Image 1 (cartoon, rainbow, N blue to C red):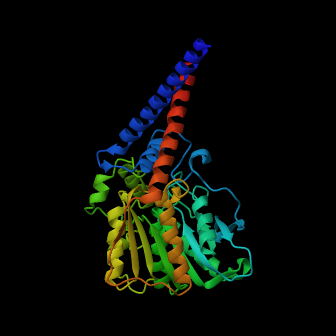
Image 2: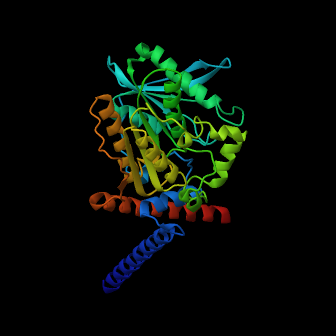
Length: 394
């Protein structure tokens, strides 16, 4: 009897020691992942970046981590989806993906332009599907994602001509999908943010459809070589965008240097930014494109354009696409949806004069939630790393 009790006590102590050792290993790993040359990262940002940069999960820039560690809400959306092709100049066709609410409408229209460095293999309407779908659901709008042509097969201006043609198609065919042609918004991330704001310039210059608003998520706003601290500081690629990729994008998308000075590639240097729609510009602290996005917000404000600009601290390029994993991504998506709802309802109010808003890392319950989930993800990643190592040894 006594021997059995001693055995149970020993097993309990052993299991307790193992739990403490595992927790210690997770804590040390997360601490090390948080430590970078550019500053200390929040736990959730650190583990997500570690997973991506070490190929520990099957991710590209926008695909989600496994649901078992994300806390993702289940359930289906009442949205209707349709994939079609439209003709663009050059006698070719490009894909569109349309998400729309059920009902008669008419619903506001959001033209969405995906990121991906303007080149093949870095992004398309499939990699951005979660974000496109979420915007439609949260704004009660029709979202039309444009599969514009990309380099190296199609150089500038193919992408923007495709994108503008898609706007004209959306206006002409609004009645077929319960859209409101009087409420056309443009939105995009990274390279798509560049295209989105270029659409406002093209629509103005060509006397095209009136654009209601523009939403630019961490946009690229210049192809020119100008001093930008964030491009120098976060150029390694660890934060999901490298200087090498940026140079490759410029070389393939705009192979002639004269293209770099066009307002349709480098709106930051455009001489005329008058008569453009209200803008929401979201940037990320750990992002090589941070400074040019914020500089573009300042220039729009100088021309009297209503601008709301928010920098999210503690996160990297592309963070809004990770809204199912990162609380800051959820905040960014909420801000985007709120801006679009307000502008489409004629209720947008932006304080004057212009001022960049800085949103700090999650606090309170949201911080606890992020950190708890970060440790859960870290445990998953470490377990997967150990399993992969064991499999290789066999």
